[in-house]
Structures are given as C-alpha cells and as structure tokens.
Amino acid sequence: MKLDELERKSILILGFGTEGQATYEFLRRKWPTKPLTLADRRTLGEFPQELARRLQQDPASSLNLGPGYLDSLVPGKCEVIIKTPGIPASTHQIARARKSGCLLTSHSQIFLSNYPRDKIIGVTGTKGKSTTTSLIYQILKRGGLPAELVGNIGQPPLATLMDVSGDTYFVHEFSSHQLAEVESSPHIAVLLNIVPEHLDYYSTFDEYVAAKENITRFQEPDDFLVFNPAYPIPNAIAQRTQAALRPFNPEDTQGILKPGDVQLPGKFNLENVMAAVTAASLCGVETAAIQDAVRAFRGLPHRLELVGIFNGVTFYDDSIATVPEATLGALDALGSDVQTLILGGHERNLDFTEFGSRLPGNIGTVILFPPSGERIWKAIELHSRNTPIPEALFVESMELAVALAYERTEPGRICLLSPASPSFGVFKDYRERGDSFKAFIKLLSNSGDIR
Image 1 (cartoon, rainbow, N blue to C red):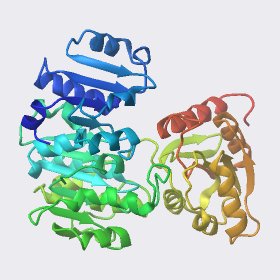
Image 2: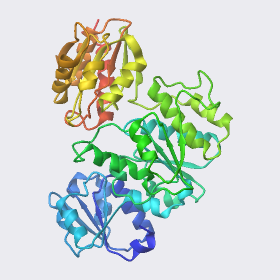
Image 3: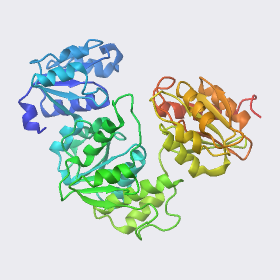
C-alpha cells in the first residue's frame, strides 16, 4: 500500500510488538498528528514504562489494550488494518472487517510498496534464513555497498526507511508470517529449502508453502530467484515464477570460493553460503570482497555454536533447530563424536518418523523435554535401526538436562543441544533456551558436583 493512500485512510495498528511499534514510530514521523488506533492483547502496564508514557502523551492515538483488543475491528470504524505477523488473518474479527470493506496490510507490505524494489533482497525458507541474510549483508558491506540488515533478524525495515537514501540495499529476512499477506515481492528473492513447520499456525503444510512462495509470486521477468534445484519444493516454485532463475549448487563454488574459505560446519551451511554468494553476485560485488566476507564470517549464536570444552566434554548450542531436519543436519555436520543429544520442546505436530530412523548409532543418550520429547522417543523406539537404542532421560529443566549431559558424555565426546522442536512453554524462545543451556554448562562446570 502506497503512503499517499495510507495518508487518506483511518488506520488500526493491530498488534504492538516490535513490528507494530516500528510501524507506529514510522507513521508518527510521517504524520505527527494523524489519528491512529493501536490494539494489543497486553495492557498498558505490561509495556515498558517509557513506551507507555509516550502512548499516553500522544493525543492523536486511541488505545484498545487488553483481552478485548480485537473489539477494535468493528466494521466501518477503520479503513486499513496494519496487522502484526503473529495474528492469523483468518481470525474471525479480521475476516469480518475485511468482508465489510476494510483493507488488510502489514509492515512488510508497506515497506515493499514504498522503497525502490531493485534495492530489496529477500530471504526465506524453513531454516538457514538468518545465516544467509547476515552473510549477504556482510558481503555487500565488504564490497562497499550501503546496506541495512532488516526483518526477522534485524530491525523492522520501516524503522530506518526515512534515514537512508534510495541507493541503500535492504537485506530482509522474511518469515512465513511476514509473507503470508504480501502482494509484492523483492527484486532478488532467495528461497531456501522448505520443510514442515508452524503447523500449529497454518491449517496445512500447503498453506505454509503458499506463504513462502509469496517471496517470488509477484516477481517480474527482470527480477531474480535464487534457489537450490535439488530440493523439490523450491524447484517446483521456481517453475511457476516469472523471475529469472539463478539456481545454485552447494558443491559448486562457481570458481569464487576456495577450499577452506567457508568456516561454518555442515553441508547445510555450505548451501547457505552459496545462496548468499549467488545473491550478492547479482549486486555486482567483486570476487575478492565476496571471498573476504565469507572467510571472516563465523556464524550466529545458537546455530551450531561451539560453546566450549568443559570438564573434557565439548558442548554445542543448536537451539535454533526447531524441526527434525535441522537436527539431522547438525548431527551430520558434527559426525560420530556426538554422544549425547538434548531434544524436545513445544508441540507443533511434526513428523519424527524419519528422524527416528536416521538417528546415528553413536548417540548413547537422548535427554528429552516435554511435550514433544515423548513423541520423539516413541519415533526412536519404533523406527531406530540401531542396536541398542539410546538411553532416554526425561527432564523438565535445563539445569537437570545439563547435569545429566555431564554425567552421560565421556571426555572427548560431544553433547549437542539440537531440540528438533520449538522452545515455547519451558522457554520464551530459542534464544532463551540456548542461553540457559550455556549458562548451566558454565555454572555446573565450576561446581563441585561435576567431576
């Protein structure tokens, strides 16, 4: 939606998290006195004090906060809903408002509609998005190009839109939720592999795939789609796009990279690197700058991150692994030294059958968090090809999980946190889960209880 159209319409910002707040600040800078309605399930007292005070002192803002926040969606009361990604568009009140003529848009769509498309690079997929997005950004910066890291990994793009020139590249990580309702696509789209996830949000896997496909659905012939043709779903999507195709092969470094340039472990990380290199090359970055950026890139926290060696045990934090395919990739990267594996978390109805059958025989102990840990263990029991199968230990705290890992992992071997499940429930998010893992590793290594 173009800004001149927004200016003429009444606006409801639905959801006031990080994106909603950035949308509000952007609109306030653009139109200091324009009436805005803000709706969120939290009450004013649950927001940071400074933000709450700012909202109270804004005479042009109407607040609808607390459990009844969706009551703001009264037909005829707002012309445009700017929806946060976490609220499904299928929500009854949203559907009713749209039926009455209210327009639905998002932070992402406003950005895509109002910034030069030839300077937007979008990245999506189930796993590897943050690594790929970050590396593209680093390559562009090393190549001397102005760039902003935005979206699901950086700050929301509207937060900086008014402070940069139109020559700045925006490298945007898109979640499926951010793409679900967009009607524009970036100039350069990077589509990584897609496997089942968020099945507690989408009614079917096909619906999840359709949201991801929006990154290329609205591209034109002078746009580009970067993808790995070895994966069936991205390859099928590539056959439907109008964009110029730029397939990459992770085993073919295109004469740009040399052995040893990539410092990240695992085949999946080589795929992420080659996706980033392919995208950055489309921006005209010279080979030497690409090589330097790749050599310097060491990865991101909680993504197969080496925590260290404590009491002879090597610990890796792969808390970002929220699907079984990611955990299998981590196990493949680290090899036969992995002895103890910490699994389980929030239930998203994922299928662990293949995981159970492919779990390598070097795993001696699996430490399992509820509720998905129960189903993971059943999949191992039913489908494991190993004799004997691992020992199973069920826990409800990270402190106990780490203590058991110290007990069950021999010196010289590896303990890997790679849960194959989201973190919600016991932890706020994957970051809190990984930070808790690292904190207890260091705490228990210095206690008298661990020898």
